[in-house]
Length: 84
Image 1 (cartoon, one colour):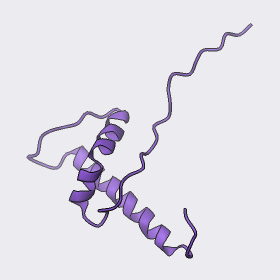
Image 2 (image 1 turned 45 degrees about the horizontal axis):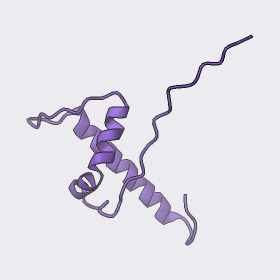
Image 3 (image 1 turned 45 degrees about the vertical axis):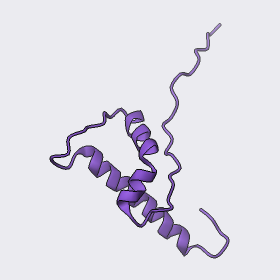
Image 4 (image 1 turned 30 degrees about the horizontal axis):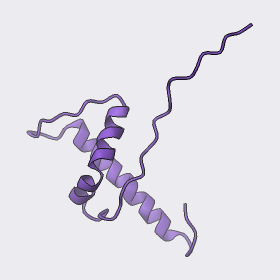
């Protein structure tokens, strides 16, 4: 008989972001600070607090914002009433 072990690892899910202020990177980051920090640390990263130069976290934030902007642009191209 084979024993079944419970699965304790879950996949990391991309959060649903608040895109009300998507046009402004700084405001978008403020609106989504908790979700972004949680998503970053779930991926095994530590939050760096150095502000002397761009960090991996800064670049990662820009990528997340760009992904959301791309999704918004893609959705705008769809016929009226259709969602992704």
